[in-house]
Structures are given as C-alpha cells and as structure tokens.
Image (cartoon, rainbow, N blue to C red; front, side):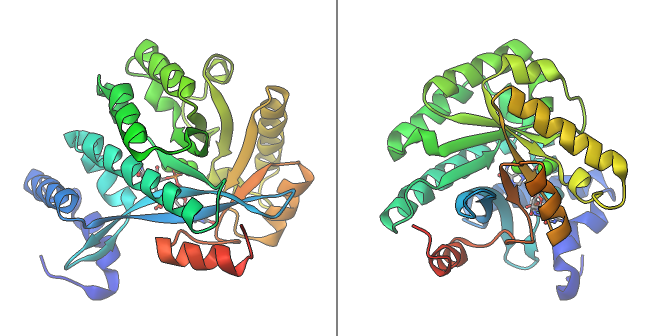
Length: 279
Ligand code: C2E
Ligand code: CA
Ligand code: CA
Ligand code: CA
C-alpha cells in the first residue's frame, strides 16, 4: 500500500477490514515492532483537583512505525489482542513504566503514580501474577506507585482467576483502577468485591456535559457511589473549563484530559513537570 504522510496515523484503520492477509501483515509488523524498539510510551498527566498537582501519569502505548509514522493504540491493540501478542507487549509496557518510575524519583519527582492499562486478554495468561511480580522485583520499584487500569471485560473470561490475580498483585502493593467506568458491563458488585481504589469516568460522559442532563446525573451518581465506598474518581477526556468546573463542584478527585495536557513523550513530560515547579 502507498504511504500518505498526511494521514499516516490512520494507515491501518483504512485497511483494517480489507483482508485476513492484511491482519497477518499487521501482526508480523507488530512482532517486529516489539523486538525492534518501535513501541514507545506516552504519558498523560493526571491532576489532583484539590491541590492542582500532578498526581500521576497514565502510560499510553504508541507505535513509531519507521515508514508509517505514529500509529495509535486503537489501531493495533485489537489485533494484538486477537493474536495474543498483547501479552508480551503488556509486559514490556509494565517494564518500561517501572523504569520511568525509578527515573522520575531520580529526577526529583518522587511520589508520581504510574498507571498502566491491562487488556482483558492478559488475564488469559496463567503466569500473569508471577511475571508481573518478577518485573517489579527486578525493577525494585515502590509498588504503591504502580496502578493497573482494567475494564470490567477483564473479569468475564474467568472471574475467579482474574479475582485471584488482583488480590495477589494487590498484596504486593499494586492498586487497581476500573477504566471506562459506566460503559459496557458495569457490575456494581465488582466495586465491592475487588480491590479497586479508583474508578475512571469514561470520556464519553464527560464530553456530553453541557449537552445532556443525563450525563450530569450519571457523573454525579458515579462520584457519590464511589466516594461512599471510599473509592477515588478520575474523570478522563476533560477538554473545557466548563467540564472542569462541573467536576470540581461534584468533588471529583482528579482529572485527565487535553485541558491540562495531552499524552506526551517522556522528555516532554519531564519538561512539563519542571515548568509546573512540581517536585
Ligand atoms: P483509555 O485507557 O481509555 O485511555 C484514554 C484515552 O483517551 C487515550 O487515548 C487518551 O489519549 C485519550 N484522551 C485523554 N484525554 C483526552 C481528551 O481530553 N480528549 C480526547 N478526545 N481524548 C483524550 P489513546 O492514547 O489513543 O488510547 C486509546 C486506548 O488504547 C486506551 O483507552 C486504552 O484502552 C488503549 N491502550 C493504550 N495504551 C495501552 C496499553 O499499554 N495496553 C493496553 N492494553 N491498552 C492500551
Ligand atoms: Ca486507561
Ligand atoms: Ca477510558
Ligand atoms: Ca478504552
């Protein structure tokens, strides 16, 4: 296929449904990417609404394709999940995040939380806990600064196994966030039975603020439910002052969104933290 520099980010998207051959090609490319250091983490700050400080960052995967430019996760994670490649990729992400976590303390930003996304597919790996344990042990990081984000779909394949993984990792000090909360198969019992310390309100609700009274009601309800269970709330996809003000009034704990900062490469994040005088 021909390269179109202006839309290189969408390259795979346009062809995604073309053929099985194309899927295989993408899969092979991804394997090469994992071996060849073409994957990179971007970091998006999460701001504490009460202190205005950067509480932590979400690590978001990017693929620096040598010819196609920056490819976003929505384009390749589904393929990585279908092929199982998300398992080794997921471990690479945790490893990389742990390395940056160490580095951030050395740079004078101790206490920064690093949040990493886990795919439902990673819970099919029977060695999940022991592999993650090995990674954090080797990296020698403060596990209380490591947060894993999962969606409720992670619990569907084998709820008992997934629950056990969460418990074991939680005992090591790792905390968990429920991502995209309010979409999909939300089951309130998850909040009660799993070691979840944070929920992330999906950006689809945040972006409806001002356009839909329902979105306001849903966000209010999520925050009050979470707080009554001693669970913190992060709103994602915050882009405007209006959204921010509403969330502040509702005592949302943290926000993440373009309003404060987009996901950025590591060196830009370091600049960002320095410019805010954060330490
Ligand atoms: P997510 O976990 O819900 O991550 C938040 C997404 O919202 C990110 O998209 C982020 O760039 C975007 N976002 C943040 N603030 C705003 C905003 O103000 N406006 C808008 N329109 N968007 C905002 P991104 O980086 O493209 O990632 C998409 C999804 O890919 C993530 O959704 C997550 O499900 C998945 N993903 C990313 N990295 C990883 C990874 O390392 N492992 C796994 N399994 N999934 C990942
Ligand atoms: Ca997430
Ligand atoms: Ca989300
Ligand atoms: Ca998502």
